[in-house]
Amino acid sequence: MRKPVVAIVGRPNVGKSTIFNRLVGERISIVEDKPGVTRDRVYAQAEWLTVLFDLIDTGGISMGDEPLLDLVRQQAEIAIDEADVIIFLLNGREGITSADEAVAKILFKSKKPVVLGVNKIDNPEMRNEIYEYYALGFGEPYPISGAHGLGLGDLLDDVVKHFPSFDETDEDDETIHFSLIGRPNVGKSSLVNALLNEERVIVSDIEGTTRDAVDTRLDRDGQSYVIIDTAGMRKKGKVYEATEKYSVLRALKAIERSDVVLVLIDAETGIREQDKRIAGYAHDAGRAVIIVVNKWDTVDSNEKAMKSFEENIRTHFQFLDYAPIVFLSAKTKKRIHTLLPEIRMASDNHAKRVPTNVLNDVIMDAIALNPTTTFKGKRLKILYATQVAVKPPSFVIFVNDPELLHFSYKRFLENKIREAFGFVGTPINLFARKRQ
Ligand code: GDP
Ligand code: GDP
Image (cartoon, rainbow, N blue to C red; front, side, top):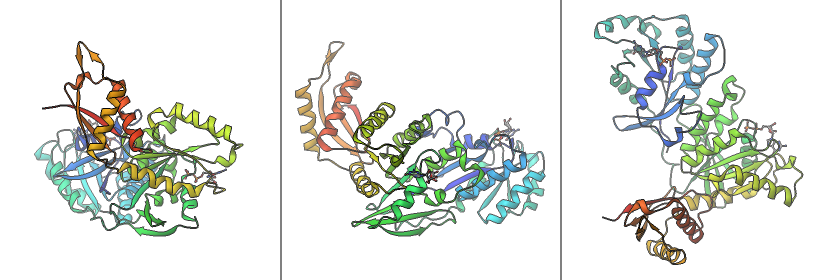
């Protein structure tokens, strides 16, 4: 389901990242635990009074060495493109500067809900000095102190009031939501267009609640699909489109709403470091994954080339050993028709529930084949297994002592579960619990 998105904008040094970190607190999803995002997070989940939302620190999306005005303008545009509600942050000790006015003008034109935060109001006496900020035309300015965590509650109360209510009619369980991620220029937009132009596919746009969010719905062979975020992919040519932080932001946002993620690789340029990082986000989020090697028309295509490319992928993406690989060309449309059935298969597996008795038979057969070993004089005893969740399928095995479950044995059991139930395309989780 789509969560509301809030972006913080404002000049450098007004306190955006301070506020961001305060609002996000410790609720950092594992996705962010990756190089490149940890040090300087720009996107994370936050919560206010049980309402979950995603928060963007536009200040963290660095554009290089632009003049101040260009920088704040671009950040304001990102906020308008990405967010449902914008927190416009000002420095309460400096008054309104010309850069603030420039931001205000852009935000005003966008008609997006804007909530004003006047930061660095560290003590109550200073609260009387914030009236000049009414002049910006966004209503009541909220005096806050990011450093001391003051006033944020009132600000957030107002932010939450502006959240759109999302139309859930298309969010039924039967519809498969998928997204395409990958470096700039791997062919994401081209592939979306190729899919939309496929003969047997019926296309309809779903108007989102915000101007920019237009998901596309496809129907084929009685199955509905929604491609997430094609609007963002279609809308090109903005300066910030090319920055890596921005692509990461887009990718995280799209992954979050997906059942299946297509990780695109460019056959022409081969695998790059950035590809691995991007693929890691999908894996960490527990989504079903398909690796799509696009631009296969540029490669002297034969069995051997395909095999060798496949081996290369398996070496570089060991954490995605469950992901099927599809070689295709968005340009010539070669093998495009195989993609939707593959997505459907991965999605089915991602949501699959297996019967407990069959699961236990599989586990017991596995143990018979490869008995558990002893560790420090104690032998691991597996008593019982059960599936506790789907998307991705997650299993708990009850044991005498979880410490005795060696990594390699856990891996062995996971593989046996995979073999038995065919979880192609989806990660699975296996946890050991001590039996009470
Ligand atoms: P950003 O560039 O907008 O992300 O700003 P930062 O969050 O990096 O903050 C810039 C500076 O302002 C840092 O030195 C912060 O410690 C300081 N700062 C942030 N919030 C407050 C506040 O509420 N009061 C005071 N006095 N300083 C703050
Ligand atoms: P995006 O940035 O990932 O959305 O990539 P685009 O879809 O804009 O494609 C980037 C470039 O790659 C464009 O010039 C496309 O024409 C080209 N391209 C996309 N798919 C293919 C393909 O299958 N084969 C070839 N040869 N070029 C492609």
